[in-house]
Image (cartoon, rainbow, N blue to C red):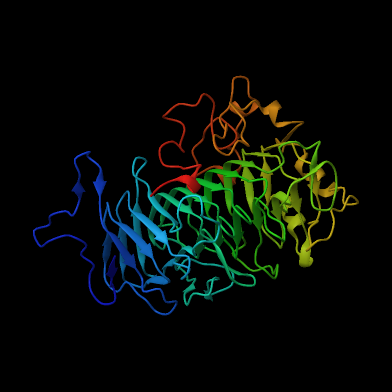
Length: 480
């Protein structure tokens, strides 16, 4: 196996001065390439010090912490496979002023995955992808979580960190130290000049997606079988996200309670601007509760045990002003928590319309609403919390929200909880097929004005299934 050294010169992989490609086609027409090492296995200062291209059809072993520093661009060609090394916690960090140009395609996505063999892969096999920029956050310049050296934050809301498009991140996400984790993809103060679309994070060992400040927008995101939260927004993140899907595994959840959305203004709940004001639209969140009548959380309430800890589809707390529109939320222990923890004014922001849950459907919950979280390291579900504030808010006049008794009432094309073949499209007669509302100023610009509610419309076809061709719902058994 060749060692790829990138300390002070431009990488030229199998390309002669004539520009000939290193692609090698065998008698069966299979495209093959070389396997090369990216990084030296250390967690020190291994830098890609000049503009570099990772070439298809090569495979790259990501070893240790690899930094793309200020002024350097890393380009990754469509179809490239990058395998994170478990023993060195392989992690790719794009620092402020650096760029990643990773433009995959539907037919040839770029794949970051575990270096372990099929059948032996696990969440947290490697670090993850960290993208850092110069956009604002509400905590000033700060070091990103995960034990890396890099800072993020600045004053340029239109900062451009490059392109992430048609990419899969599989089996990443590690707890570097207590409350100091690397997620599947971590965004730190990434600006709106960055293109982010068609990303799938599967079996992350921490959050699938987490944003710390920034203004970046994104479309077509998939969080699949993650360990902790699916979409975590902090430190004043104020981007716009449209078309997001989360699918939870019933046996995979964090010891301190997994949520689908977890949103804070910051960890201290301080009223610092810019507020976390992310706007989500056309989201479909499907939790671990296949049968509410027989589900048991770990406090021992009801039926057969699910061996992981889950909390809410939406846990909105600590002064967040997040909004979600035209979305469907199903099969969680709790649907919505809006919490005034640490003395925050989160419920006030909901009353004033700065936080929004509008034109959304809930279905198949154990409990639809809570006013506060109920998991605190092995404490029990709190039946005394009737969720009266959240109930009143969700069902407010003009909110356009709905509660369905079961997921079946929403008429999906199949079973959305089938993780190998999720039936997330809408069948004939689904109430989600129309009725999306775009009048609120928060969604009046920057969004596609589709008629349907949730991430997918009716009548699945090749043209409207935006997961087709590039997503993978069986990464454990895929041979790369």
